[in-house]
Length: 137
Image (cartoon, rainbow, N blue to C red; front, top):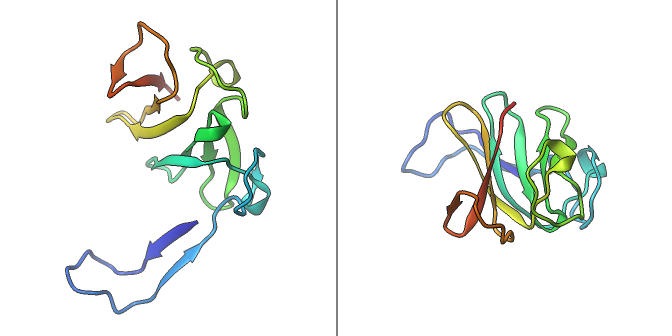
């Protein structure tokens, strides 16, 4: 679901305009499926971040992967990891493995940073007990 405010600028007083909530992707049923809009399935989406082009990245926690929701049509694709396969491995796209990714951020260059809270791999940069994986697009 997405919530949008139609107020032109932030204000400390209540906005007189209406607010609406609409579903961009998924339909409320747990599962794993890439697809457009309601055809997509997530399982405990945990963290989101939006890039400068409007793409939405979702940490799909219980599916152990990171998904991308396209701006406009809401097409969902698996960006990194494999849905339903927990693990901890560096790699490109489907070769990477995560164990309950949750936090997402973009660095100043637009690179996606993923906090993988369930991993127990040693020798990786860790912040607050979360592994950080960097993906450059």
